[in-house]
Image (cartoon, rainbow, N blue to C red):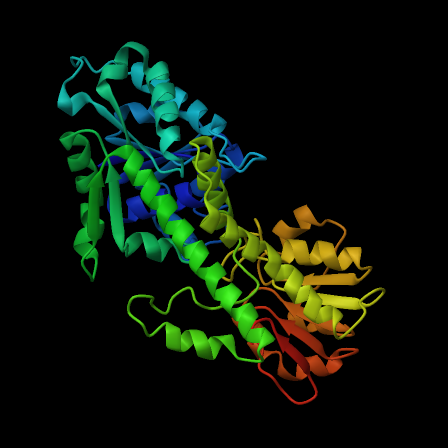
Length: 439
């Protein structure tokens, strides 16, 4: 099939590359000419394992990128994968997405295919891949139809939320647990089924396909992320209690996870969740709920617990060393391993609090140094974890990169061997003053 993907960020680039790998003819559209050039050159402007390999294989063949919208005219499906950043109140900003939807509609209206309006084969399917709230569906649809003008009756909007994890997005796309199609007609559902057929056929397990309306489909995405974020926060809340009792929260939660009503995933307590999805999505659905007249106490509590974890980590540090004027290493800057994304990373409030305490902060991350440097240009950055902790009076582990588990004797080079571990990646050892956040 012929597909266009408007927007070439994490979701859009992964979607375009994986659709091309599934055998479709894909055009990626982005307003940033440097991003377009990178894709056409066979590499991504972001760090995502496996993505560069797919781009290198398919760029110039089944995948091309452009800044022009005209290519949507010949597509069987057009995806909108535009960012929906948070406003100050937590609601999402639909400005860029609705602008893209309107331009997509204008491009479709410019097609002269000689078909009659309402001809099923000539109708164009535009699919929102961006994460939007149920009320946002109407705004995007209105923008699309406004752009299409007289051609609006042969343009349908659908939603198809993504469930990708940064650091494993390619694998998640190619081996989905579920596919969610939010459509208003049988032909739109059938078109999405045909598009995803190669992935479903190649899957080594059964893929659940949920067929519903556009608004319900996007709510499934929010329900998914809100539940997972809350599960982590509950594990952290219980972990904090365990710490007070001198109990290892990991031993407790390992046993709790054996209950098949609960499951073992997302029970690793620590310094909390970050990234571009959980914080934004939980805030967005909370704001949408309030707009609709409902206060969501459970989600409010999940956010409050998460926001408090970095401070608990710093309190443990304060109990061992006064960091004023001292070198302190922050190990891990990305919000999770496997990505260079620092959006809402727990390292950010920790760095800010250390600076407020007068510490000389040294940061290290295997891949996220450049992106964090945009946020903290004056911070000292080390070339390795060992360099970061050399001469330091303390080290805080914020991201669980595997290489941190292999530091071993490097801790001997610290001025005082104090380690506060927020991810349970460092092993206790003689000569090391070690504190686990919840163990």
